[in-house]
Length: 198
Image (cartoon, rainbow, N blue to C red):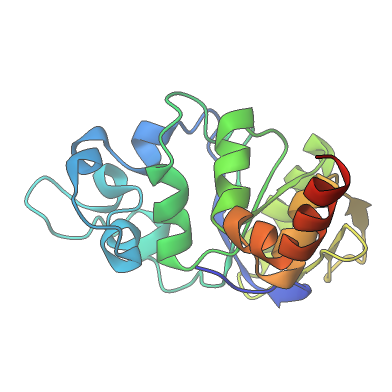
């Protein structure tokens, strides 16, 4: 899951549904898993929408539609609400999404995405509506997500917006660091501070 972020340009997978909760992202029955394998959770992302009760793919669900591909998920408002399960972020990352764009994220889920090297990009509802329309017109339309400049651009229309991100998390994403990596990277500074403050 650890990958450095810079500028990502990709086509998108649209999920124009509001209030997608973490139980829809990864159903509760998968929380008992004893593995942390990315492929396990990625294979079960949106499991109950993605597969019929007999285990066959639901051809009407977007992840089973070869028309749409890319490492950016464009989702409706209030994405990731509900329980705080980190498994939802594991499933998104395990599937291969590197960015989720929405007009609003549940706070805990947003932080879980950041901790799992998935960048949540919050945009205005108007910008989100334009993205959905662009993707509907051209499923191969590209979106550029520029983390250093905190800017997302619809390459078809040229319209862009800036997005917010915690400075610490931005540094970690750009350098491929989790929280422990960050502490190790700053070990000398921590030890020097401890020496000064005995």
